[in-house]
Image (cartoon, rainbow, N blue to C red; front, side, top):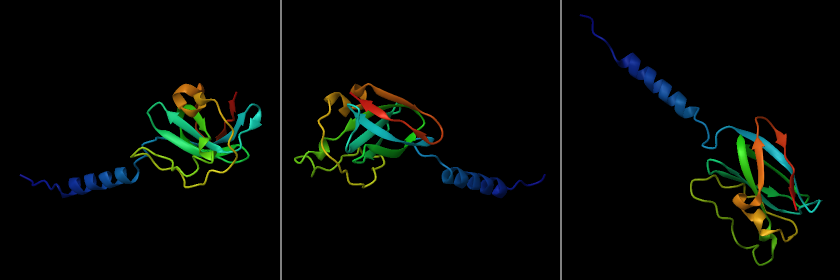
Length: 146
């Protein structure tokens, strides 16, 4: 009776395991480059941050520059959007941005611009009424606030 060796099987499994670990995807899944301009009452919003919340509960936060532009990598699929700029008020400028544990921290890019009071409904993705479907590939999505 011939003896079977498990060495080939074990090393093959180990190689497959290392390959899978090395190629594992981000918990956010496939992402696309998204950029655009945020407008409030027809004019570019002069600073703040924009948040994209996925249906899986992940959020991506991007800085809005003083000309109203943003850019980031966002998971493909439907997202709800929030816009916030209260951090530009003098009394709130020293408070750090809180990010829930386990989520990637946003780039340490300073938020610059001019505070403009926004309706509170835009501060949270659930209440803003703003949605977008992110598709594969780079894309532009302008956000219009009333």
